[in-house]
Amino acid sequence: MKKILGWAKELFISAIIIVIILNIVSFLKKPELASDTLPQFELVSTTQKHISAQQYTGKPLLIHFWATWCPACKLEASNIEKLSKEYQVITIAVNSGSDDEINLFLDEHKLSYDVINDNEGKFATKFSISSFPTTFIYDTEGEIKFSEVGYTSTLGLKLRMWLAD
Image (cartoon, rainbow, N blue to C red; front, side, top):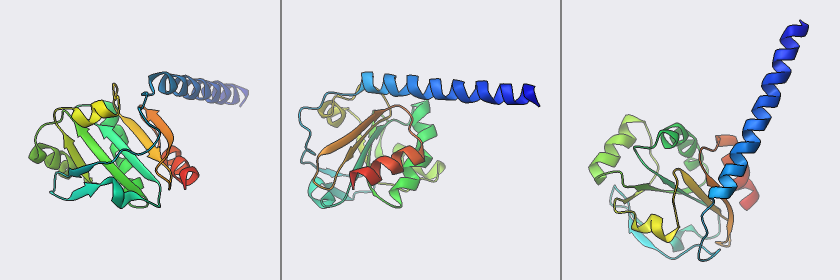
C-alpha cells in the first residue's frame, strides 16, 4: 500500500510540475496585441454566415485560432465544441485549406461551431499569432481578459469564461 501511495504522490507532483511548466510556456508565447479591446471585424464563415464583432457585445467572447494540421488543435477541438454550446465562440482556421476542406474536417470530427477561414493568415497576423492553438477571451465590455497558447482543458476554458462574465 505504501508503494502505491508513493507512486500516486509522485504522479501528482509530476502533474503539478507539468501544469506549471505549460502555464509558463503559454505566458512566454502570449501574443502582444496592439490593443486590449476587441477589434472591429466583419467576416464570413465557412458556411457563409456573416460574423461581426458588434454582434458579440454584452457577453464574454472566446476567439480561437487553430489549424486542421495542428495536433494540439485536434485534441482541443472537442473542448471548444463543448464551450460553443454555452458561450459565444468564434474560431479561425489558419492556413487550413478551402472552406470545403475545413467543413469536411468539422464534419469528420463532429464539430458545429462557426469557423472563419483565414487561409492566408491575414487575420491571424492582426492578432500576432505565432503558435497554435491560441485562444483569446474577451469580457462583456470587449476587453481582453485572458489569452492562452497551447492546449487548454474544457474546465480551464469554462472557468476563464465565467471569470470574464
